[in-house]
Length: 443
Image (cartoon, rainbow, N blue to C red):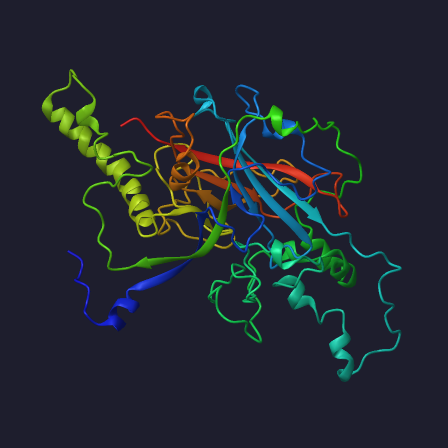
């Protein structure tokens, strides 16, 4: 039994810990983030340049899918020149569920145009002395590699609530850091964020100022820049009237995950998304030719293999039951199961090098597929939780008892945040990303 809570308020405060995971909560009222949303219709980075409609079609029935999530994905500490937006779509046809391609994700990105040689300031031909070291082209290298600010101006209304920025500006209540409260007053200074993959932050201007050997190392494994237009023509995005009925729109609010270390684990698996998983066990399977002893062995093996991971999943969500989204760029997902294809995968990356994480994510299986656009490794960015289903389908009369039945949807994105080929230099491009769906299992 876990220790009983002390009457001391100090002891109660000490029992809570804050993790690196940023949680998203659905809200019917507007929040400070005017871009991120659950459900509704997608809002593109450039309304005059939507993606190809083929990216939002189910790969099984070829019908248009509906939006589950739109997220403002700017990451100034990793990609200071990039505007990012993430979209997850799902097919509403139940006959398509549990098949690859019924849930798809798009990453929209616009990379700022690098300054031309004429726009760059001429360098002084004189040899700098110690007093001039501050003007050295290497002076800003730390900011460029480990969290420089973005040269792309943006309004406070378009700040990413799930970004890893160190700013605590009240205008950016959810632009957060691993060590600072996102709602804390603005600080006068903050240490640069350590970046485990620094080459992705070097912009073109800094690269040109560096020795060729260093710049070439920063481009390891990256394909040569493409200046040609995409080979495939875009399928026009249809009018809203031609799309299936969308889920209701919810705004998103965010806060870091807080866990109570003294919270007891449930002795029985709690209900997630209105489904009683405790009742859905082997005892309900009906008549069987196996003996009672064999049935007991099967039940024990089932609980050992399946329930342990799910129990951890359920216990973790139960501490913040209204979360619809878990976000940690280059982090690890919270697995719903270890027995399916997604659960057996490795999500370890440059930031996390553990064999088995606290979230139950193993690093022993195959990795996420590489980015098809640039061949870079993909990294975990976010996952949807079952409470998102409850929010989206609460007032949907068309759902009835046949609602979505996934346990979690995991999004993996290009670790370099590459732009769509042929869409460099201030033009919005769209790249399809990897989604791993862990479905409800027949128990």
